[in-house]
Image (cartoon, rainbow, N blue to C red):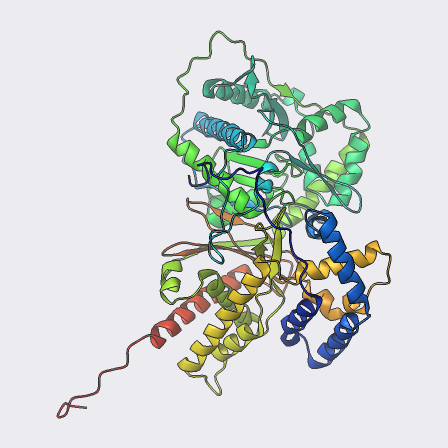
Length: 622
């Protein structure tokens, strides 16, 4: 894989700090982003509040100065603000609402032993990848697309197997271990029970045969009904305040404290799932199963959602990885997942190795002391997860008419093109545009994470209106002009965001530093436009892969859509999600509108580039 040849050291990167954009630039861009999304009267009020904030001697000047000071004193002035706002302060349950998943190709396991062989190879691949991280043996990622070739910050890789999100009332805590090189233990979940899998035996890495043997023992131990504990993992699927309260009760007993310590300090989880019915093996069903496990009655309790990486191996071949999103971004998850799948394919298994001469220890089962209070917490968690399972409306589809090769032939950015198509699809369904989120990587900077590309531009609105109005109908030339302007606006905004000139992180920093200074909240941040502009009804992300797998996640607001897409040469894979409880959304309706939008834009491009007919020759028939 291209990420594996060592060039620049992960530890010796000299990247610039995230800049603090000019205040007037951010305020001007903010007004341009929202003007066409609110009514004229509301915009006048918004502009007045923004002008007051940005006036000479106003609150904005002071807060901008304080942000500049913060930039000088920190590695990344926005990182902690962003982490809390995006993840740690969110009180919703992690499954569906926060944690994305990578869905691996459907595996055709002949029997249980096949599934355990696959799990064994994942475990060995994780240990190999972790060793490469520890020894600084990953090639530094470089940007693709916009500003291609720029080196990227690699610190997120160090958090893949060293992170844990603790539930805390009000705001969670993200813990990242340091100086933890070398292999450690993993946790294996099976039948809602948890077991410790040591990766070393007599100071040597376990062989494939030894790991397989331990997994086989774990499956047999999990069958024993007399030792089976209640499904404690369900607690981690609950709302963060509810789980925080339950955890406070759990840790009072030293037996529980020991079990929690072993989970929290593990490299990752390996979840050996019960078989799914044939009805649960479509792409859409597999995506949903990765996100929530199907609830307590299926595999929803066979998880520990606080852990950053959970590798799922279903006995019926439904496999993938669920990640707790706060430590790292999707591309880091993709790189790790692609390495593992290629490792499984390219590295021959050594199952023929005889397990002899060594006495394998019995895997340790984690035990729990469950009081009536804790049992009550578990019982309350199950129906809440069940409701989440029933609420998620997931639609995964492959748009096969064309892919990024066709878009590039139009001399257009595939990502910008797809973003404009998403705007057209939403407009076709709702006759309006809404605040849209597209993640923009900030890894060009030290400890960079993401900012937001606000894709619902006024140029996109002009294009989608031209595509949908009948009277007066716009000409193809007018539509193409508006399409090019929409794609240009999207491309320019993307470039601004990835170079540290987006508005969302800057506005968040100004707001948060006003709180730090115990100032009265500026009117601009109390304005309904600012509040609604941060309700992302359309939450989108491009997650491209080079092997057969796809990413999925849920909506970020109750009446919204999640739209993850994976552009390939001749097709585009989409994962569209929404909530059934909302009367404003339907994943199937949006997916159909999106396919129509993509087809309409293609047809427009073909007509626009079609050569004019040759003039008729004299004497020819009309």
